[in-house]
Image 1 (cartoon, helix red, strand yellow):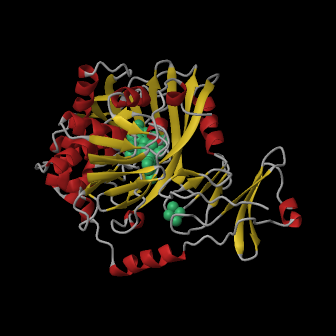
Image 2 (image 1 turned 120 degrees about the vertical axis):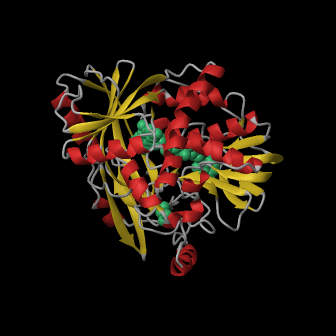
Image 3 (image 1 turned 30 degrees about the horizontal axis):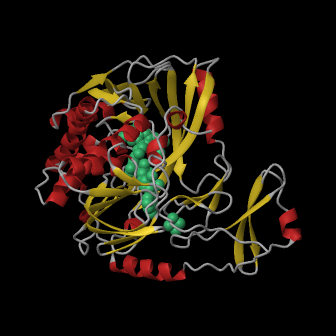
Length: 481
Ligand SMILES: Cc1cc2nc3c(=O)[nH]c(=O)nc-3n(C[C@H](O)[C@H](O)[C@H](O)COP(=O)(O)OP(=O)(O)OC[C@H]3O[C@@H](n4cnc5c(N)ncnc54)[C@H](O)[C@@H]3O)c2cc1C
Ligand code: FES
């Protein structure tokens, strides 16, 4: 089943890139970040094209919960102690201003995307002190925040922080509409970038500047983003017949609930796991049991899952891709808060591309991370090691295949190779090479999503080995005899 957003919106297909073209800026990725950045650049008179491996909005943006808020968990107390008050204030101001920018873009372009202003709450079931501290930190940063002792949720909470004047919308209606006047090439996967040449699987682009808005950067060296981010996967359901909420809610505990309305649906989510760590499954079941307990008689209308890149310090990387690539830019590591941080990225990156001072850029600078020399050598070694052991015409003996039951997946060893075997309910066998095509880690099965996942940096592949999510850009398919 796909997301509520995908089921209730559509976009016209775009052409694939053919041949060689030239532009001022090539933006890689047509998710929220790429489209907002291309929109802002175009608005400022900079010529740009967007290159999208699949369709517009086919990534995380189509599977989000789409709360537009500067309240990213209980973050502000931690930001002040970790980055200092000045940089914490940059983070707060940039994300708060992003909400107003949405309002202005939606109004000035008459975008019909169900944008609705409402408060956002982060609550706790445990300890009022952490809420008190967060309210104080937020007020110190001039955020319109309040301590709340009670909410209208169908269970008691200890306390909550309320941020006023936040918002929600339908992310794909917004995205498709904003992309209408932009040049976007779909089904065009970028496979390499060298200096100013962006090579895709169907053509190439010469660009003065390149923006990596592809969710998880796939150029490993320089940049070393794979050393600083992993991915966390969450499961979401949209309920009919459940009581609606009077705002947007999130438990401060990452195992807790997230709730918001969309029309008469309650969008309900709970917990997450590191991508590649869900071999037994059960996340949808837990979610549906919790929904039935809180809202007896409710019906699951849609269910879906998605993942986001998590930076080590929980602050996104927005800015120069690396110190040695002055014309490459990146926005990644949104930590499941990419609605406002995509907007922040579009402004910071447009300022940088225009050579203007950006008042909010320091806290997000990717150059705050310095990989150790040993880690850099490791990266090169692993890169060399990630070769495909499989030749064309690989066969797995029947005896080994018979061990796998219908509706089961297993990793089977044969001739020094590890093969991921999934037998579907009809008994058909689907095989993949379990060595991730990104940097060679061992893939693991996700029993909820029927997909192969990499625990290292979160690449995902379907049962035939086709890339579902990067940073991998090559499939892990096996051609049988
Ligand atoms: C379950 C869940 C709930 C969330 N809820 C919220 C929320 O309520 N509020 C909030 O602020 N954030 C939320 N987030 C986070 C938010 O959805 C994401 O941070 C945001 O959508 C990321 O946008 P993006 O443009 O960076 O990535 P994407 O939408 O993934 O776009 C990247 C695009 O790049 C393309 N691409 C990748 N590689 C290549 C390549 N080599 N060549 C060409 N194209 C390529 C992909 O196909 C994709 O379309 C949530 C995330 C999850 C997982
Ligand atoms: S995603 Fe990096 S090794 Fe698999």
